[in-house]
Image 1 (tube, helix red, strand yellow):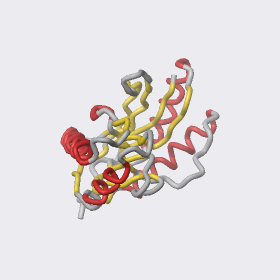
Image 2 (cartoon, rainbow, N blue to C red):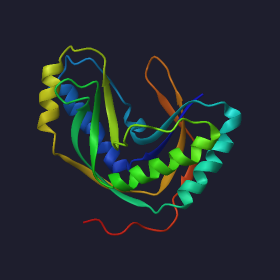
Image 3 (tube, rainbow, N blue to C red):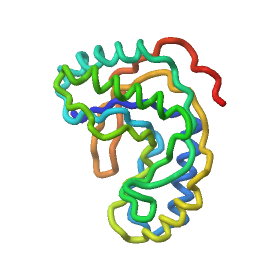
Length: 195
């Protein structure tokens, strides 16, 4: 089964992003995008790839130690963009204006904890984001890029990340569906007040 480690969004932030996806669809109706289901929106900390079901408990135990060592994180999502760039995106994303450094530290510790279990350490720097969709072809790209530019600085919402989640991904023709295999609470209490 394909697995990944992530943090969830607050329901209100997820609802705003679902409306944002719909606004992008309306602004670029010809764009060829596979949209992330609103219930599947999250911030990925580490993609694990294929993990035998028998190893999931071992992975969850390693993640439990990481979660206990980190405090809850106040996060603010702001702005839209695309990888590798907004003009010709392959991935559409909502960015993080606050909490990104803390999530990067969490992702780094997840990497370190899972390396002894045989998972490759990520070599690219962590770029916290929520994937809204994946562009499948250049059709309608100009309108989509213009819509992203209009939302480039839009504030989406704030929430508190209080747990790590080990997810299983099930692929289907209708898109990926995610199932939480383990929810691991972050330790250390509430985050400091956000500025």
